Length: 331
Image (cartoon, rainbow, N blue to C red):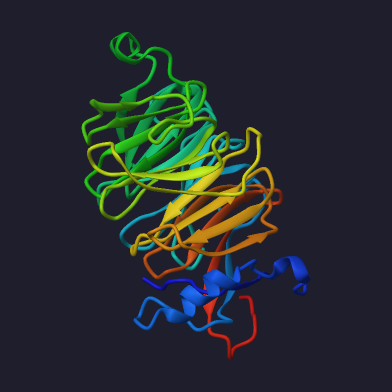
């Protein structure tokens, strides 16, 4: 996986004004310069828009309100759209392949889907928010059924009312749902059985205030992002805090889209401000930038590119890293 260090973000919509420069502290630069192994890129590496995977619109391949983005083992991209009540699949180069779902409550239909995550190596799990369920599809778009019925009597007796707004998965097929109303994370195994509830409220380590994003690391650790406590926390497989660090987010209700690459580096995008932050696996800050258009979904592809789902304007972009000798370009 390609790491990120000392970045300048140069995106295609404008010439690079001062705000497009990553804010990298002198201390962070010293850390980056001290990295002598393959985890460091040259200072001055640029991040450019390699492609627009999904433009705004209503036709096949277009999006109106993209809420989640995921990548399968073959590099294909899956995007949920809350306004069009569907999930769409794209080849890695952005060619639309198929559209799944339609507005409704029947099996295979969706109502305001708010996220998508790989289900093992052969499927996708879609958070069907207004239908209060997690539906599963194979990689050809064929429905596999409801994995988690959030409105079932049994589950409500165990966990109470659930308003899940985000979904994440680990490599073993476990799923985590973010219940924003109750500031908690619900973890389910690959069969949809609840195995852990993380619901401590407050500011102490392991508790939450203003949860806005979740993701898994390649090692199965759970990453959470909070507005109220303005921090990232990383939990080990046993639910214990392994590490945490601050992030400069403020109050609000916007999504904190969170992603982790194959080497454990963490990216966070703030829907409210359009800010983007990047950290090393241990929380060392790499850089920050402001200028995304209300980002609501974020994922790293296996080639090291970063896919960002934005709602204003609606689109999904692929960002790539480019050496300092080359100028920014778009295709």
